[in-house]
Amino acid sequence: MTVRENMAGMPIRWEWIGALLVRIISGAGAALNYALLRTSPSETTFFPGLSVIAGIRAFVTKRVAVFTEYKYNRATIEFSDQHVKAEYRTNYFMAGLSYHFQ
Picture 1: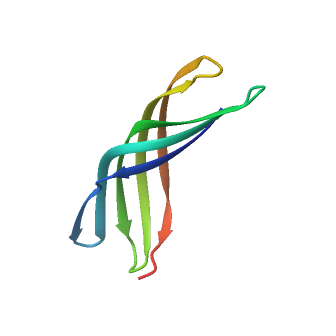
Picture 2: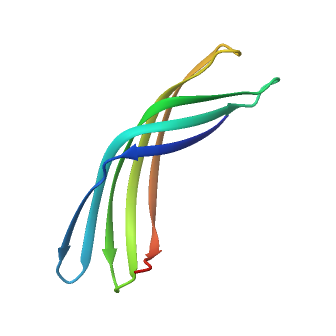
């Protein structure tokens, strides 16, 4: 099964300037998900869900930042033709380096 998720929500961002510019990001909102069940015949469906995100981004220069984020997704998937029902829950832990075009 393949699942894709799109979130529409209200992220909240706090910023302060000290030795580094730090952004704390958090948000929650509705998600629109797409799933493909690879059976014979295959079946696709769209379904609503919940998405939550939290993270920290710290700028080490004016354009380069290091970040860490956590994202949680939850939904119920139903494929009517195949009589399949599943609980979809994912946890993403991400970290990296980002470049900001200003």
